[in-house]
Image 1 (tube, helix red, strand yellow):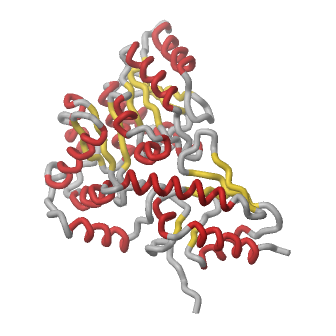
Image 2 (cartoon, helix red, strand yellow):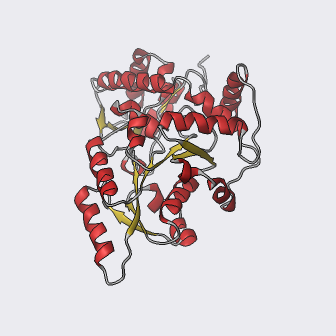
Image 3 (cartoon, rainbow, N blue to C red):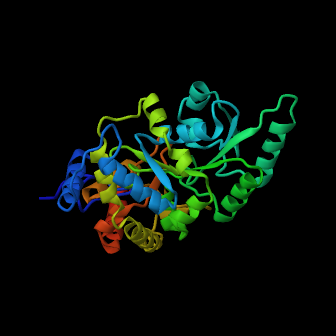
Length: 362
């Protein structure tokens, strides 16, 4: 009898998301793993306990003097920009950024800070664009200078493409020269570091503050970390609570994040290396081609040619415990994450080969 796979099985390969599947079953398993060697010390409204331990650990990893837990990345980015800019001025962001597209104008509505979107439909803006925006802000009839610059990398709306290292250095140098605080929306910076070979600490050092997601790849159901100088973080728990983010207890999330940090760098690096070899092998098959983006990280485009039913292909692969997903525009993107380590490349290639054959219309 043929086995029926689920996407959260330990031996499934799931080409979606940056981390391993998060379900009630997997969360409980990971929490039990952590509790076998650690005491679950409670926090008090997100202060102290395991939350404090996580903040200290993340500050060290990021090379910043202090860090604070936030329940969401939306809040972390908002409070970072608010702290840098106050409740006035302008914040430069990428037009494709999460801050500009996915937060309902919260920074404008709740903190009175206007966003200046640059690099329309592109991964990043360059120093010339930033210089033009800066000069415009200080030469108008009413002085309205740029108060903070926020840079997101990788950019999920651009299929996880990254802002190249040299551009980050140039942009942050411009900000330092003009005394403009610079914030890193580094939700996926741990993943980017594994892809580029630059350490998380190197990226963080370029910026005055940095936000990192806990749930995207560290195995938590929600949560984030915001790090910066002591005076930047000091007292920010008041703003966190003012915006409704002072959770009564967040120690379970902290425990899961601390558990996820163990060996993440090597595990994700192994995943990227394995995927590189896998995609080379898959590209030797007929009817299939995997494309890498110019500044890509862990997302690749899968193109199927010939008379192959995508729905049938997805169904056939699922029967082998391999999960791919069709976007609304019928495109398929393969996201590299640690689940790729669950099966050998030979098994995965064989499953694709058999599934392509069975899904052919002719």
